[in-house]
Image (cartoon, rainbow, N blue to C red; front, side, top):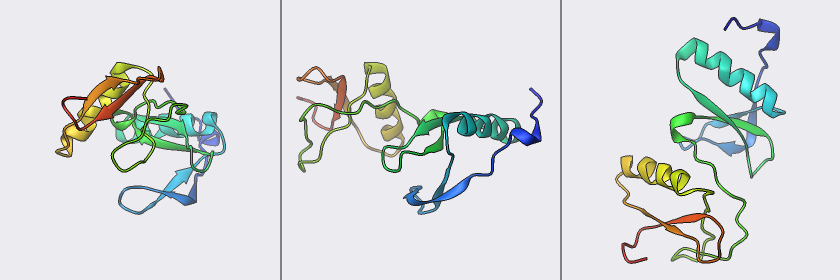
Length: 128
Protein backbone atom coordinates (compact mmCIF):
# COMPACT_ATOMS: atom_id res chain seq x y z
CA UNK A 1 0.00 0.00 0.00
CA UNK A 2 1.49 3.31 -1.06
CA UNK A 3 1.23 5.95 1.64
CA UNK A 4 0.42 9.54 0.79
CA UNK A 5 2.78 11.69 2.85
CA UNK A 6 -0.01 14.25 3.37
CA UNK A 7 -1.85 11.59 5.40
CA UNK A 8 1.01 11.15 7.88
CA UNK A 9 0.37 12.96 11.12
CA UNK A 10 3.01 14.41 13.38
CA UNK A 11 2.47 12.94 16.80
CA UNK A 12 2.95 15.10 19.84
CA UNK A 13 4.57 13.70 22.96
CA UNK A 14 2.36 13.12 25.98
CA UNK A 15 2.84 15.06 29.19
CA UNK A 16 0.95 12.41 31.21
CA UNK A 17 1.61 9.01 29.61
CA UNK A 18 4.97 7.27 29.51
CA UNK A 19 6.47 4.00 28.30
CA UNK A 20 7.91 1.51 30.77
CA UNK A 21 11.34 2.99 29.99
CA UNK A 22 10.09 6.46 31.01
CA UNK A 23 9.81 8.02 27.55
CA UNK A 24 6.68 10.06 26.76
CA UNK A 25 4.24 8.26 24.47
CA UNK A 26 3.23 9.72 21.12
CA UNK A 27 -0.28 11.18 21.19
CA UNK A 28 -2.79 11.23 18.33
CA UNK A 29 -6.01 13.27 18.28
CA UNK A 30 -8.23 10.49 16.97
CA UNK A 31 -8.29 6.82 16.04
CA UNK A 32 -7.95 7.55 12.32
CA UNK A 33 -4.70 9.51 12.80
CA UNK A 34 -3.29 6.85 15.10
CA UNK A 35 -4.19 4.02 12.73
CA UNK A 36 -2.71 5.80 9.72
CA UNK A 37 0.50 6.34 11.67
CA UNK A 38 0.52 2.66 12.69
CA UNK A 39 0.09 1.64 9.04
CA UNK A 40 2.91 3.95 7.95
CA UNK A 41 5.24 2.71 10.67
CA UNK A 42 4.50 -0.87 9.61
CA UNK A 43 5.59 -0.07 6.03
CA UNK A 44 8.83 1.42 7.43
CA UNK A 45 9.73 -1.14 10.11
CA UNK A 46 7.58 -4.23 9.60
CA UNK A 47 6.37 -3.98 13.19
CA UNK A 48 2.58 -4.24 13.57
CA UNK A 49 1.15 -1.60 15.91
CA UNK A 50 -2.33 -1.28 17.39
CA UNK A 51 -3.97 2.10 17.97
CA UNK A 52 -5.88 2.42 21.25
CA UNK A 53 -7.62 5.07 23.29
CA UNK A 54 -5.82 5.72 26.57
CA UNK A 55 -7.85 5.54 29.78
CA UNK A 56 -5.52 8.06 31.43
CA UNK A 57 -5.49 10.94 28.93
CA UNK A 58 -8.34 10.04 26.57
CA UNK A 59 -6.08 10.47 23.52
CA UNK A 60 -4.76 7.73 21.24
CA UNK A 61 -1.43 5.92 21.47
CA UNK A 62 0.21 3.01 19.62
CA UNK A 63 1.40 -0.27 21.08
CA UNK A 64 3.02 -3.27 19.40
CA UNK A 65 0.14 -5.58 18.48
CA UNK A 66 1.82 -8.56 20.11
CA UNK A 67 1.61 -6.73 23.46
CA UNK A 68 -1.90 -5.29 23.13
CA UNK A 69 -4.82 -6.88 24.97
CA UNK A 70 -8.35 -5.54 24.98
CA UNK A 71 -9.52 -4.59 28.48
CA UNK A 72 -12.99 -3.78 29.75
CA UNK A 73 -13.88 -0.65 31.62
CA UNK A 74 -14.31 -2.59 34.82
CA UNK A 75 -17.67 -2.35 36.54
CA UNK A 76 -16.98 -5.05 39.11
CA UNK A 77 -15.52 -4.55 42.56
CA UNK A 78 -12.87 -7.29 42.27
CA UNK A 79 -9.51 -6.32 43.78
CA UNK A 80 -6.06 -7.86 44.04
CA UNK A 81 -4.24 -8.72 47.28
CA UNK A 82 -3.17 -5.05 47.59
CA UNK A 83 -6.73 -3.74 47.25
CA UNK A 84 -6.16 -2.43 43.71
CA UNK A 85 -8.99 -2.87 41.18
CA UNK A 86 -8.38 -5.82 38.89
CA UNK A 87 -8.21 -5.43 35.11
CA UNK A 88 -11.03 -7.23 33.32
CA UNK A 89 -10.69 -8.79 29.87
CA UNK A 90 -13.72 -9.31 27.60
CA UNK A 91 -12.77 -12.87 26.58
CA UNK A 92 -10.70 -15.71 27.97
CA UNK A 93 -8.51 -15.37 24.86
CA UNK A 94 -7.70 -11.72 25.67
CA UNK A 95 -6.85 -12.70 29.25
CA UNK A 96 -4.72 -15.61 28.02
CA UNK A 97 -2.78 -13.25 25.75
CA UNK A 98 -1.86 -11.17 28.81
CA UNK A 99 -0.84 -14.36 30.66
CA UNK A 100 1.58 -15.11 27.82
CA UNK A 101 2.93 -11.54 27.80
CA UNK A 102 3.57 -11.67 31.55
CA UNK A 103 5.10 -15.16 31.23
CA UNK A 104 7.85 -13.60 29.07
CA UNK A 105 8.71 -11.45 32.08
CA UNK A 106 8.85 -14.52 34.34
CA UNK A 107 5.46 -13.95 35.97
CA UNK A 108 3.07 -16.90 36.21
CA UNK A 109 -0.61 -15.97 36.08
CA UNK A 110 -3.87 -17.83 35.61
CA UNK A 111 -7.20 -16.82 34.05
CA UNK A 112 -10.54 -17.07 35.85
CA UNK A 113 -14.07 -15.86 35.13
CA UNK A 114 -15.11 -12.80 37.10
CA UNK A 115 -17.52 -13.90 39.85
CA UNK A 116 -19.56 -10.74 39.18
CA UNK A 117 -19.91 -11.54 35.47
CA UNK A 118 -17.50 -8.84 34.21
CA UNK A 119 -15.34 -10.84 31.80
CA UNK A 120 -12.14 -12.50 32.97
CA UNK A 121 -9.43 -11.64 35.47
CA UNK A 122 -5.89 -12.83 36.16
CA UNK A 123 -4.53 -14.23 39.39
CA UNK A 124 -1.20 -15.48 40.66
CA UNK A 125 -2.97 -18.10 42.80
CA UNK A 126 -3.42 -21.57 41.35
CA UNK A 127 -6.38 -22.26 43.62
CA UNK A 128 -8.35 -19.17 42.63
